[in-house]
Image (cartoon, rainbow, N blue to C red; front, side):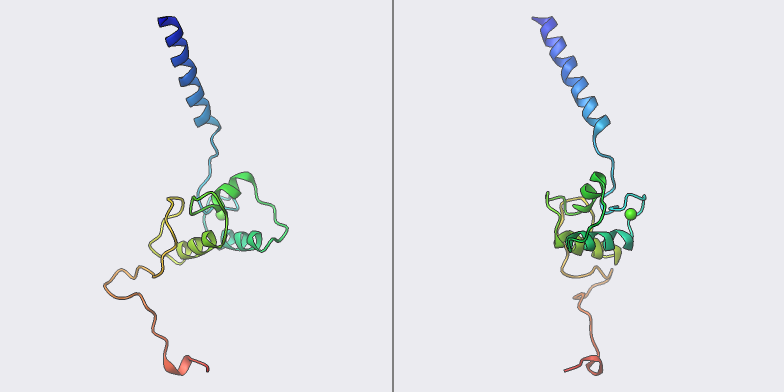
Length: 120
Ligand SMILES: [Ca+2]
């Protein structure tokens, strides 16, 4: 009985180590898989969402799900844009897009637009 238990335990350990070896290695937001998260990734994601014919690897598609909710949609594009605009958001942690930027100081985060800039 002990031998069977040991073999089962070894099999489980081997299985777990294989999973970690073959797990996809990617960085959330790095859709181009070039090692950095930048505007090229945002453009590629926008093109993908617009159903352009773009080539994205499996790792790139996994990296595009920046909200980590299992689907790639405009919410991922919004979160990626917020990240690139240096909002206080994280990619790949299951967070939702923020409604206001983190200005680093107390306030509403609202942006004032001068009345002269508004076109009616
Ligand atoms: Ca990239």
